Length: 77
Image 1 (tube, helix red, strand yellow):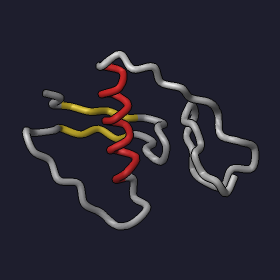
Image 2: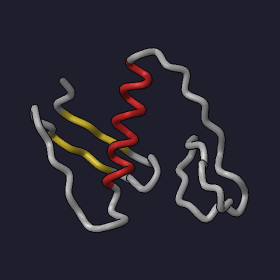
Image 3: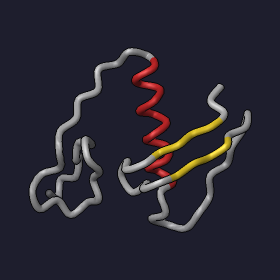
Image 4: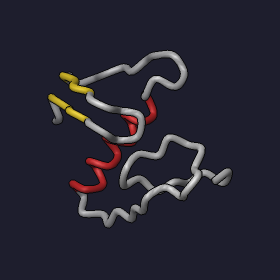
């Protein structure tokens, strides 16, 4: 079980440190990083399971807040 999580520079998460328990509920206003936190945990799960992670820098002029090393999936770019 993951008991502590530190994320820096992933999507909208700049410097986040959390202590985690057996069950955690994440709430907050829109655009505060809830989905980014979920995606950071998903990234860790993919790495732990040996999945190949494809990433590329965001396209020039991308309007989404894609972080370094994160593949932009926006059709608006």
